[in-house]
Image (tube, rainbow over all chains, first blue to last red):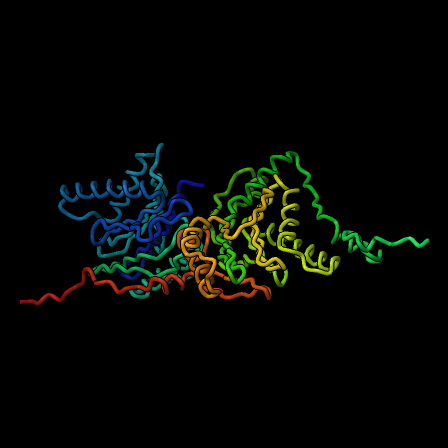
Length: 204
Length: 290
């Protein structure tokens, strides 16, 4: 069994019209046993930048703490928030620093950049960036998520429709994966507000 | 002197030798062609590994005053694709935990008064249960009486013992009602056969045992026993990643088996633990512009 499948996770981020949504499942497990059903995988860096971390839960927590430290230092020096593209490069550098003993995480980064233009990207565990214009996925349910997103995604969706689409994609994908699910967590971010919602899903 | 014909008493021979070819196939022990490979042992080891992860399931059965209660989930998860790995000599990253189906029948009806549960390799369980059903029917025809649960489980156990070490993966419970009352046996592909009153088999069995053992009493009514079985399966599907789908509950009584319910465990969760509306933590408030 792969180390990436030890805890189980499902993450997806999608771009809409001047907004983005990032969603995760809520399960924390140890191989097949479910330990918690309210585990947080998406973290807020600042109001226009979110990072989700799939993979080994301990590495996800440690990596998040490192990134918060680096972000706060940046904020003190530059006296402004980090742009999402810059943050993505930061994450990539932090991951490649551990090239020969990596963090077993797959990050999904989503943010609003200059002029509130949505930005999403994902990386593998050693920092290879994959920028996308429509959606990015990560986790044990990634193959099902690719299929669900590919069929449900439309460009330039408004906030509410984007929320519906990402929720449906997440729920239908995790229903095919034994290691993720047990509910969903969706953040919908527009230039003016951040909405956090919990999804009701199958608890098996 | 007339020679007495005893051939009819021999259960493994047909009385009249007309349909010999067909009977030979049915009555002979199933024989399997062995694959032609360079490394037979290595191939067998790999084949055993292919079936290994697939005991993802929860099944349970218990005897009580009114017979036997049998319950199971319905999720099937896929093992890896070994055939491709051997040919192409590099392993694909195959998702071992893809839920292949949410609606697999794990309770197999051997005959109208006996049930078998499926855990382990689906193909193995389906084939050998059907084979057991055939043998039970032939026993009935030859001896003019139904086979006992002990006898049926012994037939299966002996067959599985003869294939021991060859990679069959079967963890089954044979539940039925015969002349001596309710019968429940656990039979597995290692050749083990145990008589008992409460069993649970599969990756979700520890969780099911927790609920089953604390709620069990011999004097349960049929509805209470069904609810206990259903609840135990539900709790196993909640905690175990490889169990889920639909919780089926069957009851085997003096008149045979009857399916009592098939409930989706996703919906069961919200009926046992309905969502309380939570207080809103942070809400945007309109700011009054002075």
